[in-house]
Image (tube, rainbow, N blue to C red; front, side, top):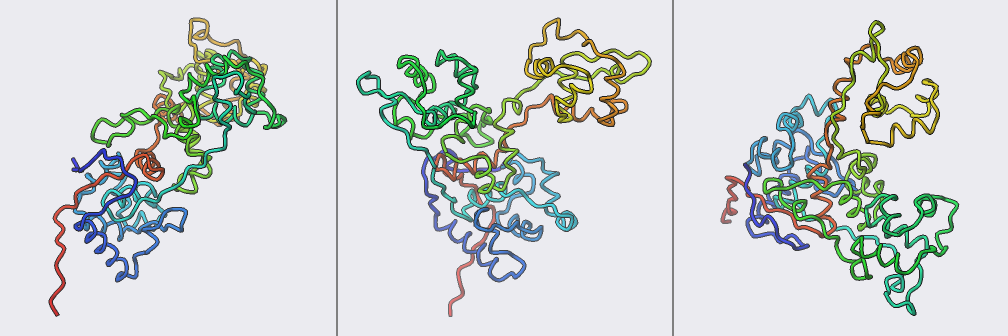
Length: 401
């Protein structure tokens, strides 16, 4: 396994020892003398980062003295997948190493300083946190939206803690027709209960770094566990950045960040698709669970599917929203075989064999990549970079003139 030092220090500025400064100087020297090396390979993504070539990756690997397996272990990658980035053929075919993987290595080996980002927290009035009736002012819709976002909780859970109608709360939170400066009609005691529930009862707590679970802050080889979607939502809301803004800073698709924040990303389920639902001879109608799985893995528009299956919108909504697989949900649906086969034909599905890998993926949780999570934490000052040892690197003193 790779070795690391000072693995859990909290400080915001990376302090280079003389040894690491020499390593850094050597790497920069290599860049300046090798016309094939982009100086932009050391830049933050948003400052014009250029992905290192397979040759530059090999030079980096030689410089730090770690094997491909060790480098892969640092970021939780499959060594086989990482090895592809070192091949010329892969580079020619357009394969590029992920920015946060590269950046994590650079910061951990002292070859680049942390790209610090400032949080962008919206303004909130102190009066909305007051327990005194004479001082308290009801929150505006804009303030409600900020704090619900910071909670990381669902609308249904938030409505319960506020003792407020879920449908009305959803309207206030997401409707474009609601003026953000309107006052949220909530009773004082219910609002205080909500603030207590989310752990933000003052402006100070609002401004503080969120209390992330300790296991999500550990090095990968020291008991690290990825943040669940709620924790990730709380952290991202605290930064004040949207998924699209984070994508522009860390070189990842905004849709991926949104997916990692969704409960579905961490949801595992024992789902399967019985071959009989594809058979023309011994066909049986799919169950609630099977139809839900089929629609999810193929990303089918649910209302288009409902139209083909001659189902109502409310019925298809219920099928996709519920995760309760009681006895009634395990029974085959009441659908015509011809309608079901029309849906299969529309999706060009013959026997379901081609869906096996998609079903397997549906059964797995998909957590945020370690390097992306760690580099984000470092950029917003929650953690400092780890210090990885550079192996067998000899820094020679300059010759006497």
